[in-house]
Image (tube, rainbow, N blue to C red; front, side, top):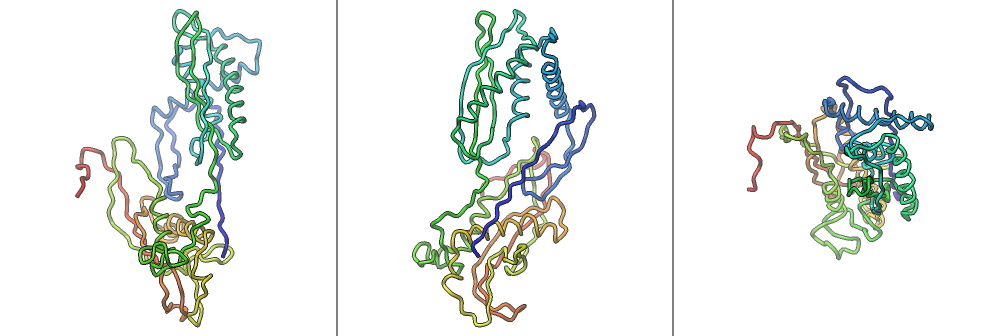
Length: 348
């Protein structure tokens, strides 16, 4: 087995042209990828959305009618907010993973009157100017697999009727192919024999423990809504032998090899980097996707901890010797509680 598959899902969300004036509901993914909770949009959510849509429609109308002068004005605060928010909504991908980032800065100016207001027509022109400027930064970033992270605008000094706007543009290099194990990660399947030469980590770790560490170090972190905390109870312990699940090509997601004689080769017992990564992602698939669905668990059934042991033993189900990663997975039910009702946890 020398294989790992990385899947990147890119969601394109189109905003409706109709301004929302009612409280709608949406399904929000919990960062585990499978847990879903229904989230009700707040009045503030709707207010922000309405502002974005209103400005978007004005920009669109101005572009479609280049000779039209609206005469409309807005405060300098609103102008900067609209420019920044509309740009990020239109071009930003803040939820991607970026291995590197590059920041570019500039100063742009916009006319402002004695009342601290700017013309909508000037704001529309400035929006196009900012698009052109940031686009230059984006394509000169030197990144191959790039994405735009954020645009940050700040009001500056006013001189001779011109207000400075400080611009900070951040471009990132995406890390879609991130993997926890590198080219030197050759680990013995189990028995705490360390690396494949039985030198590094001998009697302390092995491939099973390294995968366990990687799973725990990459647990999705979900923050409770402001003013609330999470509490957990009703712990579940799920035991897996390792031979339960496989991918579409028949490869075991969790490390498992069996034969009748009980004699295994060095290549079978030494997990190379691509095998380590394959089983890391296999563990995550089982933990976060397969088990919650197969066991028909509620959305607040949350993975807490795993213990993975690399063993050689008899499989009573198949009557064959095997080497495998035995899993003990811990889950719990998660609940939301207002802060202040319970005392916060303290160190033992």
